[in-house]
Length: 74
Image 1 (cartoon, rainbow, N blue to C red):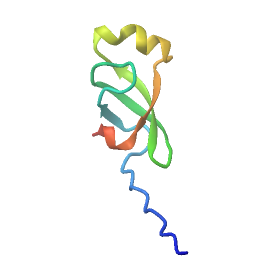
Image 2 (tube, one colour):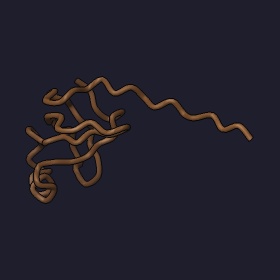
Image 3 (spheres, rainbow, N blue to C red):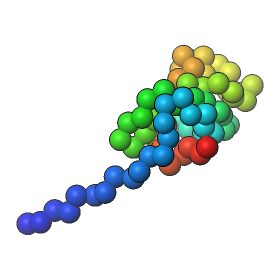
């Protein structure tokens, strides 16, 4: 039996890039952050700017979240 290995998506983000992120998890609005670590298919982002309604969720997350790379743009 031959199994084809899926090709991983190329992540075009580097450390300290400022990125725009789509809402994810309990964060209901888009936010802006800085790339802290790049994983295989996701990125650790330090949240810098967010909607006031998401303030407590951001505090709960200690201002960091892991988000799928396809939900991030420059």
